[in-house]
Length: 252
Length: 252
DNA sequence: CGGCGGCTTGAAGGACGTCAAGATTAGTGG
DNA sequence: CCACTAATCTTGACGTCCTTCAAGCCGCCG
Image 1 (cartoon, rainbow over the protein chains, first blue to last red):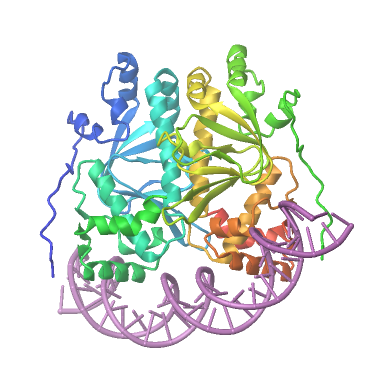
Image 2: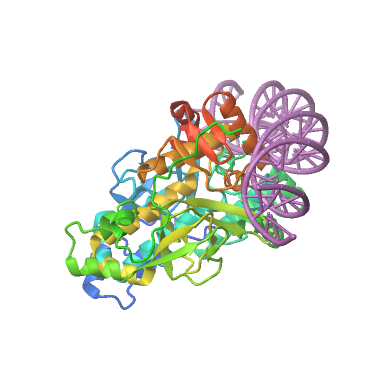
């Protein structure tokens, strides 16, 4: 049974190509503040727009890049969700993270100069591709670009550390939901109702839990009136309590 | 009983001040390749040396910076070991990492613009302090500096993800030892014999284990002939087998 | 409709944590 | 140099949270 009415789309789904809609995307993108004119040198800004390439659509399961490929570009998600994951030689997957619209993918590839993970579309995905060498060159001329790159990289270190801690299933699940909500909110989506673009198994993997445990925790949360779940649609009913549960993880 | 003879010091302990010994340290430092002349613009290089400040000594337990302080500088470890950790409101510590000579501390503070963790000396520590604003400015003139910063930041994302995975106590302990060995080796120390500068409890915390479990795993490794442990002195007898044990973590 | 993958639910087992006690070391001051 | 205490480490017994295994359910798509 479905307890929640269908979730209305808050963001544009199909950006089309060459539709002159850049501003709508860029305003929520990690690079928006430097992409969109803000007192920067005009010609440099021109360069920034020139080195951006719109790519997509990718469909669920499509690979954006694969482990070991030569690192060339970083990506900003325009629409859809991307998961990054590694596969060890036993064939077990480890999901590093999920990337929502406005977030960057590929920053961890700069150092090894090869992508250290796979990037896979979880639904219909559109991206902005930035040639990294070109971006780095531009950054030497535009301090704003350099600053933003430093910030994005630094932020990713913190993100990676978030779920690395020692916490039980309830705390990790609560933190996952709250983080998702906050990230949706930051991009102008609803913070209380959203659709999970990833499978339970993917959530479980990312949180170092068994899929069964994820199911059980979600059910427990629902029984306690904290959330309402209908398949992949989630509504946060007591975001405050969830945040309280997750406070050890969220910060620290 | 002591099974291992005392470990001879491989690295200089007391760097003194203004001893003209920079090269000895810088050659093993994360910034060495840009600090030490390598075809770079002479005046820019001069600037790099100018914005470096040698600080220390810090003693065991001393704080280098604290959570919430305004971010000003990043640090390179010249001698000793630094641990970075957060404390949640329940008062529980979470150790983010250990920083050996030649490694950077504070890169995760760029984004929030405040240090998101404490940095604490585990023994006698000497550091190079880099004013980050000055470094960033310099980076716009010296692409090599910018590249190195990007690489260091990117590498830290990968490091943070390493121990975030779902692995059992044996794998994590083996990975910890091998990673330590490799890092010592990269800086010119012995890869098979070294002294743990951190307490068992700190290792345990970092690996999300109980201190008791760390003891038990180390004993098991010793009984299997993989290592020899005498207090904090460790000798890797079967580094290959340890690496094999840790391969799922080390990579993936 | 029927098969298949994703999800849920229950019962049993295991890896690690917790608790408690003892051993060893380090630190301190006489 | 030697007590004395506190801190760290080790070891064993027991408990618990989560995984594993197994089965059934549901929605999706050919």
